[in-house]
Image 1 (cartoon, rainbow, N blue to C red):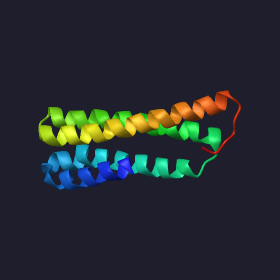
Image 2 (cartoon, rainbow, N blue to C red):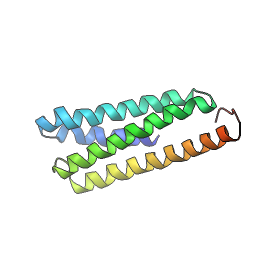
Image 3 (cartoon, rainbow, N blue to C red):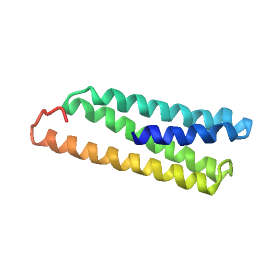
Image 4 (cartoon, one colour):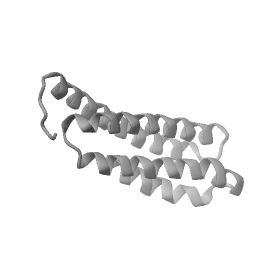
Amino acid sequence: HAVIEFYKSWHFILPHFPTPSRNTLGSRIDILAIEISELLFSAVFLNGTEKIPVIELTSKKLDSLKFLLRLVWEVEVIKNTQYVILSKQLADIGNQLGGWLRQLRKLSAAGGEKHG
């Protein structure tokens, strides 16, 4: 749900990017957000430890997304308020991913093959 909320916020901001930034950084952020959504959707249908590599990859992509968002803020393509809102949304997603990953690793270490 948090990823959808981020994308809705992002989707509103992207059309207001200057054209050169929209076609480079904006497009890359958009693609990463969609890839993250797809990975999370697919992870839901995996069992137990099969989710771990998918969540780890999702986390790496999220880190890239955070970096690119900071970059567009640093070059003043987005406003401070937009950056704050989007950054908070990404931080929330990161916290959720981290919690999910910790839970999966704990289950894996305990030998549990639950499909949590």
